[in-house]
Image (tube, rainbow, N blue to C red; front, side, top):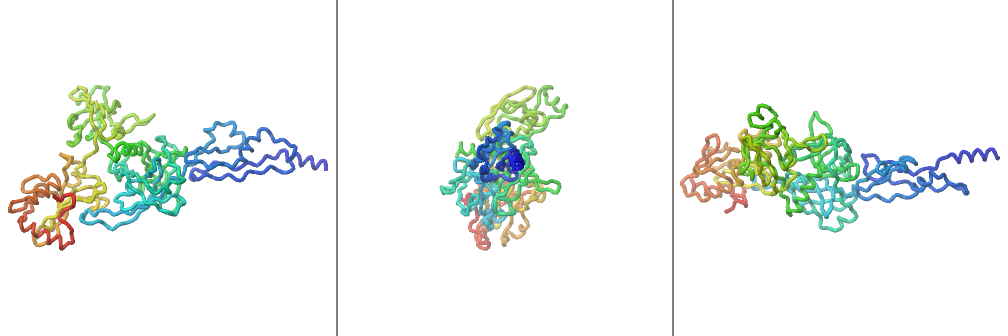
Length: 561
């Protein structure tokens, strides 16, 4: 008995005490892993002192962990003494708060640009969003575009709450929402924003994509940081490229870093046969610019631009011809927007040397972070509408400095109608409309850049507005009637003048036609076409055509005199 007892006591003495499982959660799962129940002390061990080095670990494991708050650091045991010896920063893991991620339900009613007096059939969509401070919710602008009704549902809830749209940032593809019901905000901690991540930093995208109804988590790393083309906004701003999957429905969901902070909003992905797992995220500098713009102005005013077209100065002969010294670098101005504030000081062939004290390289880039460069338009986009910037230019071998007030871009062919119904005017069956990107997309589909008439595309891509209210007008279609026989084939043809007077915009055309006292209405169109109608007959026939086609009015409400 003595030998057996001694043997058993030896084995017991050498046996390690069981530890609570607090292993680090996998990156693809953001929900906290509950620790098991504390291990009770073994019976029959009275009088034995526990090993001194194991006491802290066992005591810590026996405490039930408190649930972490949104973005709170949670300790992870890495094996006994490692916890005590390693620094706190090396043994922590962040549990992002997924309860702040909501599902966005939206009912859309899009305008019909081909038949502008009516709207398309309504449809529904779902996307993602997340709660931030100030009882507000962020999502994508395209998620609530042309909204009729917006509802939000929290994770684990069966209730949908009506939401109010506070602001829509078309260019940056961000929308700000709120909910009036106090119950919606109970028990949820807002998401906090982190700094701009570095390359290869881990990111986790959370949202409600297609393929299921519950919350979804995908993880990856930051693979690129540069100026990106924002598809919805038809503009270029700073963006992150990640290799985490971003699918339909992920739009508006947050991207977390490994410290539980939000570093961006998922908003688009690249679908191409030669590319896989390429997603894009709106970074925090763009998000904060949108929020601060709204807080300063009470509305979204947009991202300013420098209203110029520029050329690289990488060719040494070109630099020499422009009078640049060997130590001077910059870009050459090709054209200046006539409607831009800087048109009063900047000129074609000026060399922009620096913007707000930051030197511009010959390829148009500026220092960004250690070992990185980025397009100088990033510096412009960091400003707010109405702010001033110092621009240094080289003109005739002399350096000049100008204080320029920054403004948003006025395009001849508008990229968006910003929720407004399209304008139109009908006379004698001729439907006149202003060309915009949504109009081109409605007429020629998603590939309008290939299928639309060349002259319209040239205007869209290269033409500049001469005045703030200038529009590109076309005869959209001709509603067939006896008075317009022979003109039925005129479709999407630009209008140049009326009765010898240039047409500036649609309202200008309405005023001239409605007040016309001449015998004939004469419209000059492109390709040297003309349309001539007898004035009294044309105006009398208009009402009959409206009745035949069930059109409520000859013009949109914004054009009524």
